[in-house]
Length: 349
Image (cartoon, rainbow, N blue to C red):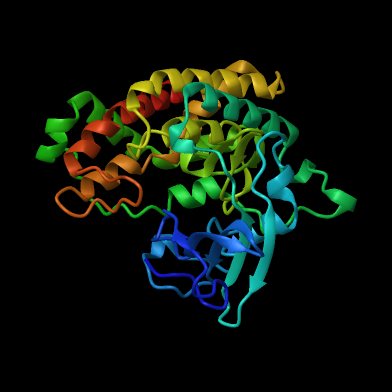
């Protein structure tokens, strides 16, 4: 993997490439290195124009789901550090604007247990902090009080869930009865996934009726570090208003989709995350709404996943983090997709 630019990390200074989504046009690279003699993480952010798939293209629009400078703004404003008590982002060290238009974001390295080494109790604790944080931001941007009477920042993601979900590239028709799919997933699952896909616009629209809050939009183990002082939440590039339940739903589902955590823990994690999230909200949203919100936003967030998987059968999996082969992915994701179908049916009933 390439080293960072020499004007940022001189030759001789260690720089270890960290796993990240290389398809995302915003991310020019992430390295564990050093700055001013201390351990640091360097994230190079790129403006629109990098080659790559259109559905991962960076945007100049501050409200776009993939606005290229959002993470810089989240750290510079202090939002990443203070949005959720007990679940802060890492300490920002510096922001360097470079002559080629890219931006180097320097963060203090967070030392601790990596997120993929989590236990169900760990994720329940994260969910509790998410619930408490979401309770603070209930009501949506028009009700939020920013320091010194300032306005809601224009760089918050405008409608992340809808914009991201409906931008996923699913070419039609979807081969629901592909032999690999028939062998891996029972008819009932494929039928449920098909109905969910056909109702995708209805499902996403239904989330609009949920209470609004400030969402991180990418809370999963790869963005968590468990330190002695508590969990730290990384990657604030998607922060913005969204429906209650969305971050908790993603924490359940995305923990298992890439085979990084044993899927046998799925049912336990689903329960402890829901319990922790409801406890964190402290009754500010009624329990029935919380349960429906988690189920509905989870269905909306991943309504595209199974159709996209099926259109890629027999070709590259297109995975960044998942190192399993096609058969292992189909089998490993089955319990998560079954939960997704159940959630959708219950939320839409």
